[in-house]
Length: 433
Image 1 (cartoon, rainbow, N blue to C red):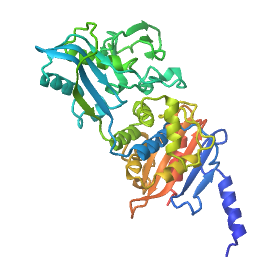
Image 2 (image 1 turned 180 degrees about the vertical axis):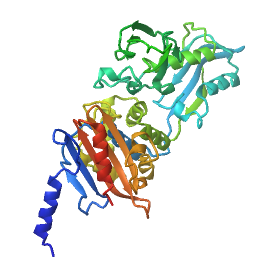
Image 3 (image 1 turned 30 degrees about the vertical axis):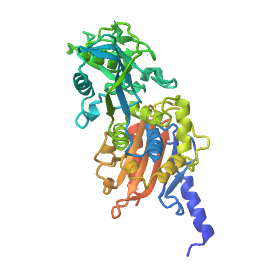
Image 4 (image 1 turned 120 degrees about the vertical axis):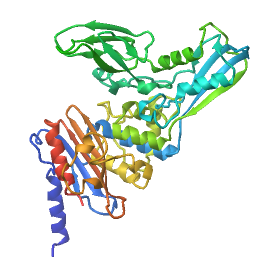
């Protein structure tokens, strides 16, 4: 029989050794916390679990936890389209006002099959109200503070789809396609200015935050006649406004907005539970930022972060740094234990648990994880990666009860080889029962 002291010593020794084995682990920063959902039971693996590390996209699991806890899975964003002015003989003598609430799904290709077409609904609403032309123009209601890219995002991330920021009015995932060499943008981007600086390198794009100027560098491949670049929109609001202007046959005259107000359309988003599952599995930064800002509508990003902390009161958050909702900022910092406690806090929220990707089935990195490992279907995980960062968090599901049995948080920073790290993580997870 092992004495209590001997047992404690054996546990301490086990926890002092890193449970991940990969080439270069000696130079990496590693934190692991895997434990039964029952907090009274000893952790399965607990290695440097209080060390603050860069989380990358596993930070989305914190954002989603706060939003679902505060708003509930049934919550839906609303976007209103209103006519202000007198409607007479088929003409609106006034303006169209579009009032957004930060809906990240307007025109999104990820919800096109399940949601009614927003622009079509606008068109049908104009016809119902007898509006054939608009003397004025479409005006977006006042912008929210801190729109666009988060200041702490790296500049190289801003031009691409990862840098699609948050706006009160988001459109088409805040992403467009630029064809090279024609430089035709789809959808059309008002005021876009593209410059091509040819060089011997491959094609890349550069755009400063908030700027309409894009510089394309490099050249087409030898066998290429054209290429399509997926880029973040400089101003999604202006794109949507121009779309509605076109539908409404707006004359763009300066017309006072005083007068009668007619609500033409109140458009609702998919339920929050559907949005969070989509953003978690695809690791969508734009939708994650909108989900965080939902916690403090109309207010600053700092206010939303404060509301996120308040929503998760009861979870140890000392020293945790929250810089954004998506995890794209390297200013974020969280420990594996803190991450695991968020998971434990939300483990009975079915909307939250189901937002994680099923190993072997969902996502890209999650689908390929633990290949050929028996029992991989019992894990629900979120991955996070950027240069030098490989992180996973989520749950092991009891195959009998179908409920979470363990919380999982594995974080590796300064990883020399991400492929080798993922192999080591797969091997570690295979031991969790």
